[in-house]
Image (cartoon, rainbow, N blue to C red; front, side):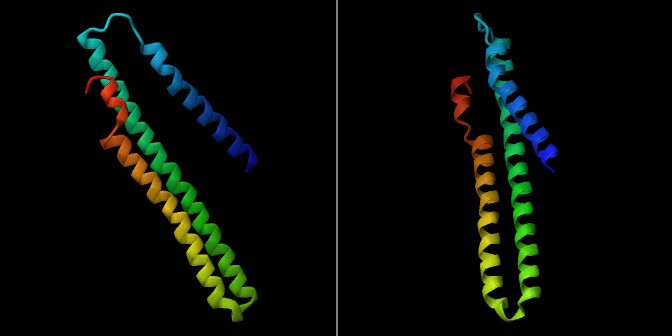
Length: 124
């Protein structure tokens, strides 16, 4: 498990580094119409990729958290059936908090797609 998390985090760091350095690689001194259209396409494409990755990773993390909460709640109720009401209430509140993270990721993804603040810098 740790090796896969390490490789995923290294991959995300490399991907982030590539996205951060892409603006320097694409910068040019002469701004022609083709360059402006290409820059707009790159910004929109990166916004689509970023929104998809953000919502996807948020959903994966929340799904893992909700599954962990359901597993722990089921185990706790199996060990102590008399405390089912308190355990279920706490479990459902934890699941709602995990699900709210997906909603925040979705809102940020929609802002990136439809109200992208970077588009004013590329002339859209």
